[in-house]
Image (tube, rainbow, N blue to C red):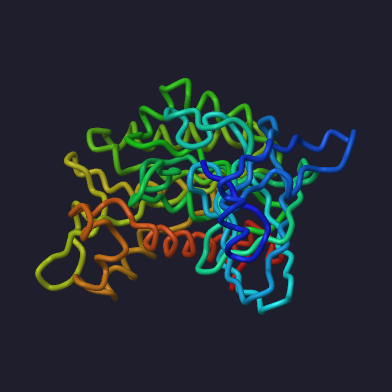
Length: 349
């Protein structure tokens, strides 16, 4: 992963991009916290062990700038922020660092914390990384529509969610491509690894349905109940999330009741089962099926293409970066509406 440096004139920035900088070490109390010395013109790297870290960035330069920050496996950590010429703006976020850094069954990624500077006119004036002393984790349990996708043009909504959360809340995205409720519970790299990491007060958002194509209703219901009970056993708060819709239209402009709305070949209506389990066990529900259905139908056959990878891959299931960002915004709105995350810890602009 490439690295970046503070805002400097263009010629100096180009020269800095060609110069390797030794990685900064974690703040262990023996010296100043890692900062700008860990950066080059395009990215930052910090030698920190797995854990949760607060990152404070100072944005801006001599000319007008507009900066976004991504990290690890293409996670959106800070939305694009405009700063007037000569001014500086401080922003903070909390980030989860782990191995593997993306999908649990995917590549390990690089050790430590990697950040990438983006936006239309990026400018970094300073950065500080410190261990997060008081943070709440939002765990994500899901499939390829949620996960940290490793490469363009794919993106899961969970990959875009961190940018909507301020310092004090981090996202630990343990969603994994191709997983059903059956495989997620059965693979030791997945639920057996996630559950012990849950602490009291953590949120665990669960969206599994797309790959439960051969799972009967009783098994699907029981698996959801197992996940809910497992979260509560650790003192966490489970949140059930109905799956995002697939982009399959009927001739009248509505979404197909089977493929689009996640009814499998056995006639199992996955969103309906999720809603039923949530109601029966007093679990907060984010009805992402209903939210995405309304949005996709309002945009229509042509307008909704940009949410998915139809133009790039003829893919009506997986979202583009744009679509994942929009859907992450819907999740953000529901976290606020359900009062699952305090208003002061959520970015709404």
